[in-house]
Image 1: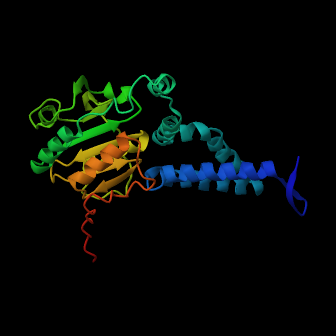
Image 2 (image 1 turned 30 degrees about the vertical axis):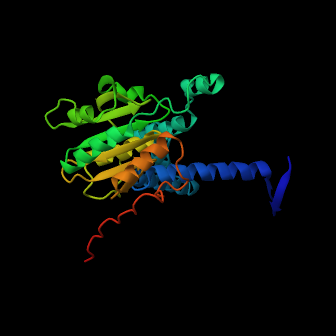
Image 3 (image 1 turned 90 degrees about the vertical axis):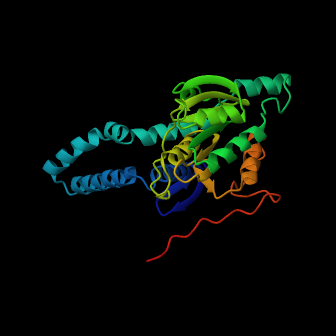
Length: 289
């Protein structure tokens, strides 16, 4: 074993350094996952209980150590039960980064389809979005570039229809039985409507964000999608991607973002706005007391 350095009697190898680094990265990712949620307080409580157990055992307080030891014995099972939503979210994030799309592999090997075969008329979409905003009609649209999203599509009603302004307005009409939930656009077609999306548990979102906005963020956190949400109360529009959101966008900026996502030409900083688009509006600041 090759030593990296030695501190007194403690010998540290390169393997130890790699091990420590990987554990630090894992703990940081777990912290990011549960930061700002109730799970953070539970995690700190379990950690404090474990530290007390170590102190009690070191002090040879047999009775208390035995009682706390019983809690520690079922600690893994208890953490799985308590942190079930966070563990599920963590596994979804891992699956999102490692998922292999068979259609993309087939296209790469055979080069059978053209690069932009899956495009659709974004103009029709933007005309519908313009009308939905003006009439304050709630809408939730998921754009999927590589993943079919069967699990979420099966929660709604299958359509497999072309994207058109009339169809979008008909779906999100307040009197339509399909207006609740989201539509999923995959490979240039509306795959399903009235789909149920996961709701973000981020406690730091603006108070005016309703269920649609939180669902848009929740979907973007757990899948590699771009989600557009329009508020029914205010007509406010946001775009959500990777758990982040943009608001106060001009329609031209929204169109650019959708096209960038579909063409896989997103900038490294997702908050960047194309130069030819109008400048990004700043959200109103809350008055300070």
